[in-house]
Amino acid sequence: MQRREFIKTVGAGSVALGAGLAAVGRSEAKSKAEHKWKMVTTWPKNFPGLGTGANHLAALIGEMTGGRIEVKVFGAGELVPAFEVFDAVSRGTAEMGHGAAYYWKGKSEAAQFFSTVPFGLTAQEMNGWLYHGGGMELWTELYAGFGLVPAAAGNTGVQMGGWFNKEINSVEDLKGLKMRIPGLGGEVLQRAGGTPVNLPGGELFTALQNRTIDATEWVGPYNDLAFGLYKAAKYYYYPGFHEPGTTLEAMINKKALEALPGDLRSIVLNACKVVNQDMLAEYTARNPPALQALVRKHDVDLRIYPNDVIARLRELSAQVVAEIAQRDELSGRVYASYQKFLEQSREWSRISEFTYLSARDPG
Ligand code: CA
Image (cartoon, rainbow, N blue to C red):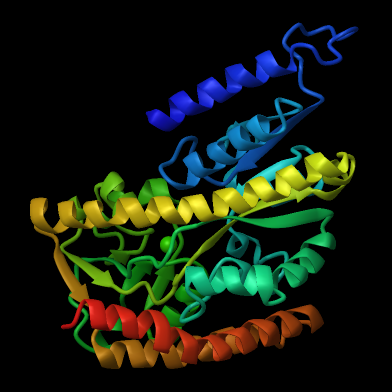
């Protein structure tokens, strides 16, 4: 609610600020912005965290440019369907898009490294790789081939393993498990003997309730509580080995970005950086009370994956991820850069975050 009010206020401010600018000769009285952009998204309009993050980005660009750029946000299916966002921005139907890079593995397998990979980097490490470890340069190179400029623009942090109506006590229990788990996580489940299925978010609840699927992953407590998944499944497993710190993306049509003067170009890219941090802060703030509500109010049975299950999934994940390196030359370089950063991060993250958290919260 607060955010919606904020957006309205910013929108109104943009019109006021732009009032004196070059309105002469324009036919539409309301057209005060120098650049009117469309942002298509892969999320339902105003979806908590993800959709509202896209709204936040659009509002920030308007605010920071004093209304010189106006960005209108479209939810999935409003202008183009969710999975056509990449192509729509690539051909210039919209100047911007907001989504997650693993949706575009059909364009390039390497795209998946810029969202998340199983047993990969955490949110904090991911930002380290992207901004200071060579990740952004590779992502930029990859998307340039499609006439796009990418930017990190949100992160969910580590996700949850998912909702199950079957207990997972051993590797054997993964055999025949029908689970909604997209992307590389799904490939890992398949190699463990399970049956991954992909369903859009809006269909998860019914599929789980009808027992069409045995299990589903979605995001984490904040989003899962909102979907009411606890009403359709008994066990809530963790950790989300398959999505350890999912980066959301903004993609910008390269020609549209290059047509902007330098100050506006910088604002657009830096607004993405603000939203990238802010969304992670939002998930960090909203997941804990949502988890408490699930466990204390809705009696959710919280379970950790058994050690031998995690060990098997880790082994299979390493194979699946390494195979991407073989696809093409650029995928090979992306894999090598990511893997090098991951290897370097292990020791420091163990000594810093892991050891500190174990010290703060023993047992
Ligand atoms: Ca997920």
